[in-house]
Structure formats: structure tokens, C-alpha cells
Image (cartoon, rainbow, N blue to C red; front, side):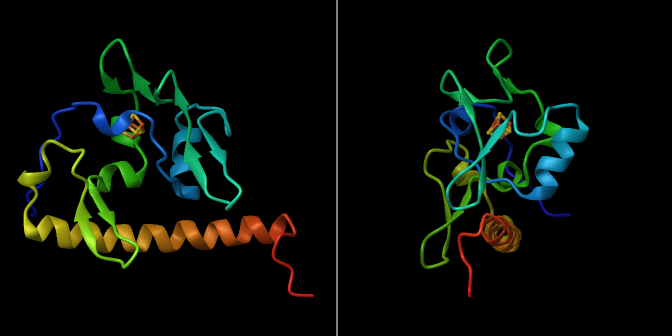
Length: 138
Ligand code: SF4
């Protein structure tokens, strides 16, 4: 089994988040009891992103200093701190203090998951834009 970095819950990645969500992320969190549309907003590009409350993610519990939905958190949060550059290169977000603990194998595996996730989110956003009538071909 792949060894994974150990999140120390430093909370840095849960501040001022713009984490993108897939339809599966939204459905999972709605099944957890959250009202659809309460924890994200769909931006002009058709991509749903987590919203912040007082500078922290909607799901962040300020009292406990933890994610309320850590076990059900969005896949992008699971994959973090791996990011892709505009050229598609996998990089470790230097905001994460545990970034150096990520092995090459974990980086490669998470990068593949991130590429697939972003393809899904982009495809879902394209459908939303079309349904708004923003990209008509005729
Ligand atoms: S869903 Fe949880 S892990 Fe992801 S940004 Fe929000 S509080 Fe942090």
C-alpha cells in the first residue's frame, strides 16, 4: 500500500479556499445532510467551488480547528497538497508544511487522480455552461 503524507491539521489549506468540487463531491456532502448550494457557489466558468465563512472553509470547525467533514471531504482536499501548473506539471503546494514528507510515488499517484478529477470537473462545468446557453453552436 502507498504510504501517504500525514496531515497535521495545520488548517492552512482550509483558509480562503477555492477548492473545486465535482458533482460526486456535492452529492456526497448533500447525502451527509448539507443543503445543496449552501456550501459552494457555481462561478461564471461553471465550476462549483467551496465557500468560506469568516475566512475559513464552510466545513471548517473553528472551535476544534478541524474539518467537520474530513472523512467525506472533497476529493481535491484528499489529493491536496498536489497541484498542477498550467503546463500540467505536478507540484507540491508550498503552503503545506508537510509537503516535504510526500514521496515520489505519492506525488505520481495523486497527480494522476488530480488530472482525472479536473477532467471530470471541466466536463461537468461545460455541461452547466451549455445549459445556461452560454456556448451555443447555432
Ligand atoms: S472541506 Fe475540509 S479539508 Fe477541505 S478545505 Fe474545507 S475544511 Fe478543509
